[in-house]
Length: 199
Image (cartoon, rainbow, N blue to C red; front, side, top):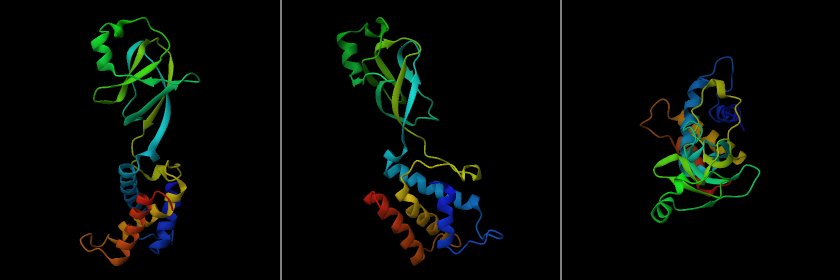
């Protein structure tokens, strides 16, 4: 599913299908779609999960860029290797204070790194170059016209609900302080679909 797919349905809903003279530009509808995706992100973050392979630095602390990972959901495994289990770094600090300076070896366990959403700790400390698979929560997209053919990470059944959201926002364009019955109905289709988690 791409933004173009969603906008095509939304344009049918608002009767704006004449490509030679659209009443509302793609840029405008993409702003509405970006808003809809942000709502989906807040309600159904599982749609924005992605496994990334991290090449480790030497030591305990590993991290990803916030541009590619808003938060770590799970540190899954050594790439093509055994799964990692979760450990409590604070407890290990208390009972084995020198563990962070231990001999580097293949990872066995991981722990969150305090309040740093895109960082984690490995036990034992890692060798440089070790590859770890990390399940991340991606950043919600901000769409531009360059993204019209970009495949979105939401499931296919969200196609029509997202189109309904875009159409509903379009219906409110003339006066955002007055909600038409049609705009409310379109918005309800969107919110009901998110809550149900299916078509």
